[in-house]
Amino acid sequence: EPEVTQTPSHQVTQMGQEVILRCVPISNHLYFYWYRQILGQKVEFLVSFYNNEISEKSEIFDDQFSVERPDGSNFTLKIRSTKLEDSAMYFCASNRQTSGRGYNEQFFGPGTRLTVL
Amino acid sequence: AQSVTQPDIHITVSEGASLELRCNYSYGATPYLFWYVQSPGQGLQLLLKYFSGDTLVQGIKGFEAEFKRSQSSFNLRKPSVHWSDAAEYFCAVGAGGTSYGKLTFGQGTILTVHP
Image: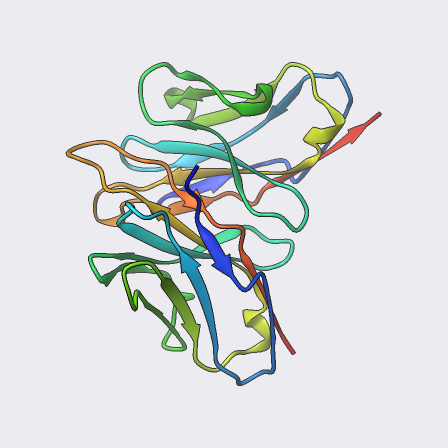
């Protein structure tokens, strides 16, 4: 069964450093998302991406964040200058396009735990 | 804007007892509703979903949920809880239109199961 994969599973970085979190969505999916879960809190939407551009972003997704689909398979989240409060689990998800009305479920990756020291 | 409320932060039940986890949502159009389960340090596993049709939906691991539009609720139920069901449960509502696919999650309910 196809699945969303994420690398690395755990990333430790120093405050102020840049990190890139990588995701490989399911191959025939066209919508991509990043979510964040700070330890002990709920899962929060960061950004959605479709047709090579951001569809929507939350207040959390400020200028320090960027997303990219550099090739036909990867979907990345870059944090330019990490802060302590960026420490969280980051989940990638993908969703296939609907034909006409309707909705399809989202498939989540296993997450990348980011620790900023 | 869409929102989800899970009123119970922590629920404790005995193994074999029945379970109901509450979820209330706010969404201006037809809601797409989901329940996810998360074990400590793990990712999100989809238990069940409601898009349309029959308001009682069956999911994996013996879970079911009932959509009640009049109450804006989508409560999760299980007739007999197993120790392995101990985890955190998240209710979520999905958006359509220009926000297609965006999920808004509730705060989660931690389920503890006593032997």
